[in-house]
Length: 411
Image (cartoon, rainbow, N blue to C red):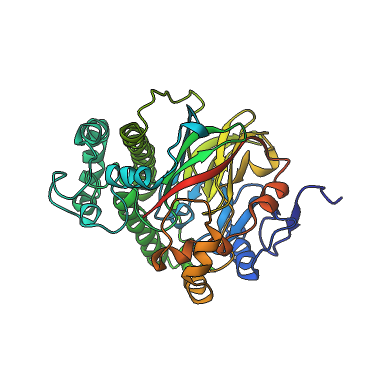
């Protein structure tokens, strides 16, 4: 019997993939990649594909991978703990200045971003032109340091990463900070980032370790990026510990940036304001143990958000498009998951080839943001239609707030 909300990709020699993709395009390469993952012998029940699904490295972005007895490090990827944070404020649209340029500049000074010397590995936080106070970073790092030291005893190569230096920094690519307005005109702060350089180092190390283990044991795979770590091995235990720590780092990274973002806005908007308890902080590249269909399983969400019944989450659109604060419906067939955004329809290289600065200016009209060659790969047309994405997952989440950005800071 055909389900009214999702289609099923039946995989020969593997588990089925339930796909919430009606009304949105899905590349054939992404379907093949999903099928390769579904053929792994430790996939539990089925996989789930969200409407923003697209080709990724190792595993498909927008996929939910439940496993028993093993984990695929490339399934989580190298942007471990990447996710979103949003906070509603007591400010309204009328409280924003007519000229939003100084507001964007204040945020850019307060949160290190992009490929600047400060985020590449500068010596000390007293250099550069940022206003970001080190106290918040120091406090957050002290809560992370002891566990990180233990991880480095097992994996010494992680010690020389930009762990402290990247805490409280945004990064590049699709990471962003936005000031948005909801449907009632209230101002929201929203940002997107993860575990930065140290998470990348952890992911890269264990992906390579898994590949080496496959070679050692002569295990053939449909894709070498599906190399896995079996439960009960030392490498599995070390990875679970390290990936859990990276997810804590990512969450704290967003919290530090949010504090600095709020402080920056207060230097421009003198009217007193508070941020609401509706703040949301959620991962969308991560793994954790959960109960599903009567068993405790590892659920890897690569570009997907937890959407348990009543749980709040964030689904951002592209630059110039709407974003959504959502409440999960707890759909068991999706392993209580929803999409993490709109999802790309083309590569960054193709976007740069196809579009111009003039296209970027037109597509981001009304948004105070960069409009130069360096962000053409993030042009809205490189992403799926967020309205179609939301319609395709109407049985996974309900919309609580619709946000439209008025300021966007990109790395």
